[in-house]
Amino acid sequence: MKPIHLLLTIFTGTTLERVLAFIFVKRIEINVPRWSTLSMSISVPTTHNNVIIDLRSDTVTLPTAAMRQRMSSCPVGDDVFGEDPTINELETRVAKMFGKESSLFFPSGTMSNLAAVMSWCGTRGSEMILGDSSHIHLFEQAGTAQLAGVGSRVIPNKRDGTMYIDAVEAAIRGENIHFPVTELIAIENTHNYCGGRVLPKGYTEELYWMAHKNGVPVHLDGARIWNAAAAMQQPVANLVQYVDSVSACLSKGLGAPAGSLLIGPTSLIKKAKRARKALGGGMRQAGIFAAA
Image (cartoon, helix red, strand yellow):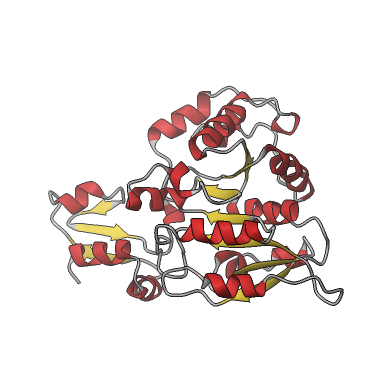
């Protein structure tokens, strides 16, 4: 396979991307001239005329030298007490960037998503609606059930990462003492298991108004929301305008060593801070991560 074909496969977001990722799950080598555009544009180790491309995950990205320098020199404090200036600056900046009231730093996206579910779903034994191919459903240890006591009502994801809105509405529980209460709808953008697809324009807005008509908030797993913003050539705030909360990851394409943020209304973030503490996510001098 030629290098350009491999790159196109990585970024097109088709099923073929996943197939290649499994085939090349360890590492592959492709012959590329040292002077080529490819060898200069990909930040990976090079030996002689070979470029190593690691397809396991975009989490293998590494912090740059400038990021490491900033981490070593940033001001820090105790974030559990709200006294880490670098964390505070990041949370304020990200909330403004996303057009929301507040944000909260987490060690991981899995914890951020779980805290969001715990904070929205105030009734133990309540239910959330999400896609059958969603990351929360497939790859987060069923933490919403294990730790939050929240059940999942699963709707099939279409190939583009969406769910039929009529099916989502039909899944919202009615007033019946035998049923759990629907307290959240969760979506994902970009959609990892559906090939990294960006949700179609207008979909989130349509889902949002349906959900709010039924009194149900919408949470977005936006682990790769910056990828979606780049693909759509839109400010990230435009893509999250019609969700009530969003989890955004820093350790994938952005290259930070760790961290995610939960962004939403101040009332939710206040609850999420308690959830984060209960989950063991309250860190002390966490500014070294935020600095990156």
